[in-house]
Structures are given as structure tokens and as C-alpha cells.
Amino acid sequence: MSQQDEQPDEPVAGADQVEQEQVAFDITDFPGGARSAIEAVLMVIDEPVTEEALASALELPLEDVGAVLDELAQEYAQGNRGFMLRRLGGGWRVYSRPEYAPVVEKFLLGGQQARLTQAALETLAVIAYRQPISRARIGAIRGVNVDGVVRTLLARGMVTETGQDPSGGAVLYGTTDLFLQRMGLDSLDDLPALAPYLPSAEVLEELASEGLA
Image (cartoon, rainbow, N blue to C red):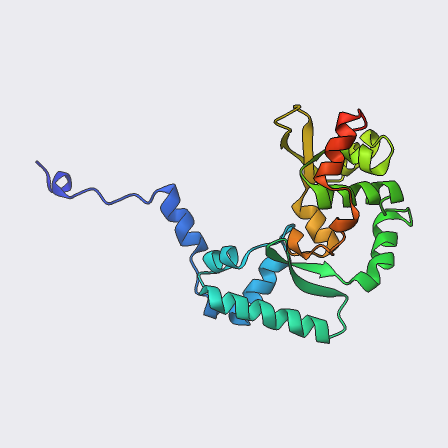
């Protein structure tokens, strides 16, 4: 056996190992450290990111990430920026400030009206407060057919199908995370106390029995 045969084979780096080497970093090596690294991530996300996800990706303690996010949010709020950092829908994201909504809408849509119609807003409110709820019951509350409006809300991602009514098999609808983001809510618990002004479940059952729901 030759000397070359006696030499053990050197380990060959696999794809996973190469990838890990490529993404390995020390957060303190970046200009601005963790603060700037978090800002860099916030600039590229298209949906809210949780503190846990940031901490995992940047290999930082969870409490440090939370502290940086709070600090950035306060700094942006006090700096008269055109944007703000908010915790909505369970995660953090940079948003344009509400005061500049007309400017943003004109830029993106060429001045076209982008707001939901009154009918869509009323239907969305019923779904938000009475979800999960069927189209028929939404129509019973509003007193009109809502099929077209619900389709619009589905297309815009504000509501989604959440299942079926066990008793009748009707499709049930509820709001989405996008709804929370657009409404500036962290969760449905933050909705204003308007539910008492909507028909109760008992009233809806009476309407259903009369063929109106």
C-alpha cells in the first residue's frame, strides 16, 4: 500500500456547512451594531416580524431586541419622520405615518380612490365584531345582500374563510392579520367596544328561523 493510500481522506464540506459559513457573523462587527442590524431587517420585510424571529436571526437575547425596538420606535416618533415603527398584529414593522396617507395614496395610485366604500366598511365591521360569521348573517344585520362586498374584502385580503357552520354548513368568515395592520390594532381585543350595538346571537337565531339569515 502506498503512502498516498495510507493518508485518510480529508472531510469535504457539504452544502449545509458552506451555507452556514457564509451567513455566520458577529453582530458587533457591523457599523451601528445590533441597532443598525435590526433596522436593516425592518427595511426589507413585507409583513410584521416578531421579536423572537429577530432574536433568532441576529443571534441576540430576546430582551435586547425588545429594548432596541422600543428605542427605535420612540426615536422615530419624536423625530418628525415620515414613517414610524409600531408593534401590530403580534409583530414589528415600519409604516408610513397616517398624516401622510394622502401623499402615499396619490403616489401609488395616481390620485385614484383607494379607500373602501361605506358598504365595505360596514360589512367589515360586522365581520370583525361577530366573527366567525356567514354571509347570510352578515346580510341579516345589514339588511342587504353582501355577496359582492364580501368578495371584495376577500380579494383585498381583509377577511378570510375560517371554516363552516356546523349546523348548516355555511362558510364562515373572519378578519385577517392584514386587517389588524390596516386598522392599527395589535389584536382583536383592541377593537372599540361597539359589539353591544350589533344584534346578539339570539337575535340572529330568530332572524334565521324567519328565513332572514
